[in-house]
Length: 110
Image 1 (spheres, rainbow, N blue to C red):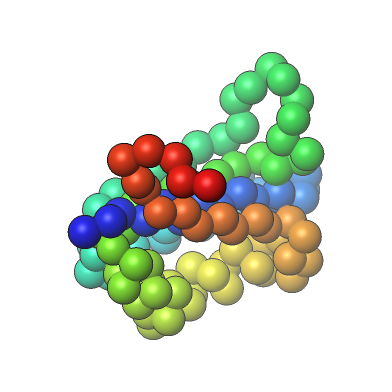
Image 2: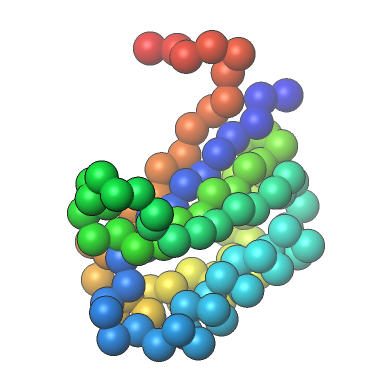
């Protein structure tokens, strides 16, 4: 089966407490144990000297075993509280979040 990646970039307001960010990423990490079809979750802060992050400060990547697992994740009850934590932390402004999903192929497809 073809695996899928779900990339999420977050732009937290500067006043966001470290504890709030830690709570969000701990909740994200816990999704791996709660939602079937998640292969792994990785996350981190922006670390490049290029400055091309457009203010996005944090990211996480979820790898799914297949498209059905990705689709189930989006509707899974364990996903909703995490999504709500994120939306609250970014002040409800969806321009502060970017989600991008793609299929892993053996080679790039146009």
